[in-house]
Amino acid sequence: MIIVTGATGQLGRQIVEHLLRRVPADRVGVSVRDPEKAEDLAARGVRVREGGFTDPAGLAHAFEGAAQVLIVSVDQFGEEAVQRHRTAIEVAVKAGARRVLYTSHMGASPDSHFQACRDHAATEEILRTCGVPYTALRNGFYAASALQFLGPAVGSGQVALPEDGPVSWTAHADLAEGAAAILADEGRYDGPTPPLTATRSLTFADLAALATGITGRPFTRTTVPDDAFRRHLAEAGLPADRVDGLLGVFTAARAGEFAAQDPALATLIGRAPVGMEEVLREQLA
Image (cartoon, rainbow, N blue to C red; front, side):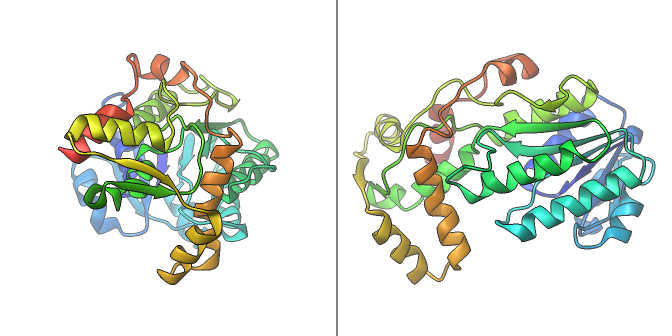
């Protein structure tokens, strides 16, 4: 059985949907915090069990009988995130999974300027020593994150953000389809995958130009000093670790940590990944 965690979240849900196109429903199980949100999956024959990364006993029940477990990374920064991933990995191994998979990041490195990528690197090290084969899906930076950063510009036309660098923004749907392909072809990748990315790396100036062309309205890229961006986020009530994390995206991008492109994702899904122009067109239409 293939178990997917976080199956009611944005990425996990799409992974399950794509997986169901490749394998029978009775070979798929999900571990979710709220089973009621996965009732439709249960109705389609998917095994739904409650399990959270802070509840090892619940996870053990959710992972029972697993041949493969895909751990979808948590949306947190720092040691708490790494500890939750560690718990899930250890429970998967104890449950008898013969392979553990994890949604990592193309920028995973202990030296990254972005805290989440340092967390991913720490989790990959746990996987490396977990005692069973593993696959770390080094996903491109989510295109949805670019849309969140661009949100205020939709009304103002001002893309006012810190200095950045090129990023190979990649759609959730493509990453989900790629993950499903890897799960359905067990062992296709052992250890970290190549970067799973779209085919272009774009700056926010590039995105502003695309938005201008799509809407016919001017979008202007202006650079906000890091300190001013930090103050703005803090005044908006964001906790310090979240502020540091968001600013780290730009610091890392400036260092070229997210600029890589690789054909691996296109090979997995059998077509070119969706580009940011299409993502923006759908968002701004």
